[in-house]
Amino acid sequence: MKSYRQTLVHIVFATRHRQPVLSKENRERLYRYIWGICRQKECRLHRIGGYDEHVHILISLHPSISLANFVQLIKGRSSHWITDESVFPGFVRWQRGYSAFNVCYKERSRVVEYIKNQEEHHHSVSFLEEYRDLLEDAGFEMDERYLP
Image (cartoon, rainbow, N blue to C red; front, side):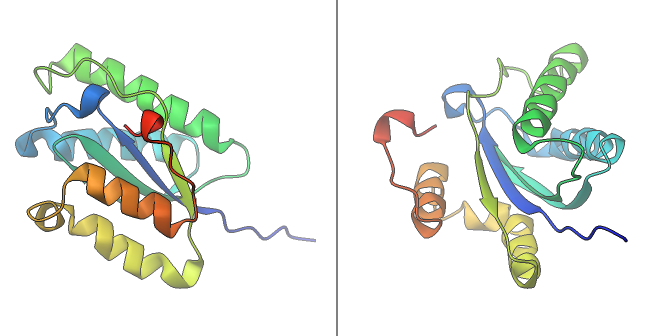
């Protein structure tokens, strides 16, 4: 019998102290690098995007890797790559922690569009406002001490 699974996850993480160092001209290189890691781990990347200080990833997580291990891998490898390639001057590291939100497959298109429009979205909304809204919409009780 075949196993069926659909683990669609929206992941968000930020640079240390939310430093706006992810310059627009090099973000696509970062996204392609992360896409390569997704392919290696057999995770289907639906969309990746972000802004000056954070990244959004929508993936179908492969059952062979846990969410925590996947995020650790993405953040660790990309951090080394950024440093080795000098892609983003001023980048120190990613902030500790991340957020991950389960996404119903029927909502996939809406989340893809949301991630695709990050540049426009952040002309009127700060990352911290966006992050609070995401946590609230997902039903998390926020502790201001742990916001990125």
